[in-house]
Length: 252
Ligand SMILES: [Zn+2]
Image (tube, rainbow, N blue to C red; front, side, top):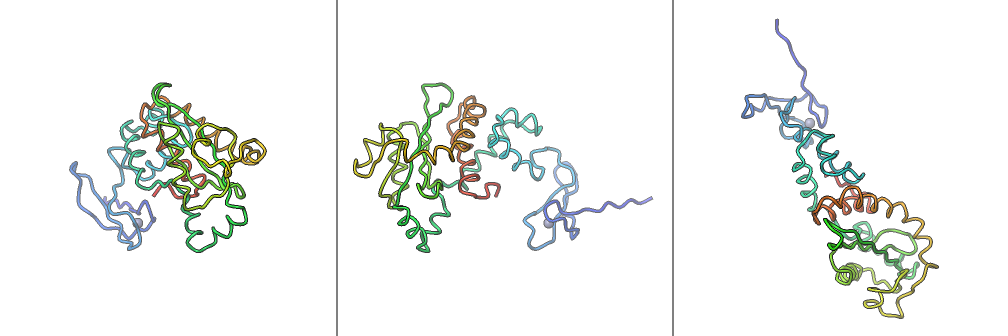
């Protein structure tokens, strides 16, 4: 008796498939012949789960929803080093300035919009630690005062250095007024005539950003503090901001 098994591409569901030889264990490989399909070769059953389609997306989703490296490894039945490498390799596609704002800027729309808003930004900072409490990690982000859109963010060890780097990222926006709820680093690096301190102008943002900030705090507490890797701390929060605030596809 001869049995036939229909093979379809896992990415595009096409059945326009050809054989693509065997792997080192003698198992059949297939190739999708659809010209637009990103799949090169695939197998029906993977010896190692980390190679299966969709696993990397799940690693990222679990990280930005507060699962630790070991939890993720256990749930997805993959090695914890695969989890770390998947997150580490995402570095290339992360951005720190909202690219949608720059697109607007190139077409002149941003200038008009920021002019209407008076080129005003609200600044917010928070710190967490990696490994132990003496190893502080600062996250600073700036939000457009009128639209509550995150403009840019920055991570680092030293409060003042991080703030200066964020300020450099904000340079192209031509911000005329900064609203903050504290003194400290702001006072040292923003001209007094451009700086307004107080809760009055940060109330709206405080409320709207609460969700975002609570999410990050939860991430910091549950996922990151035991990671002992600054890189992972920055990576997981960066992924979250790129997805939630910048609206980018972080799975590419
Ligand atoms: Zn395909």
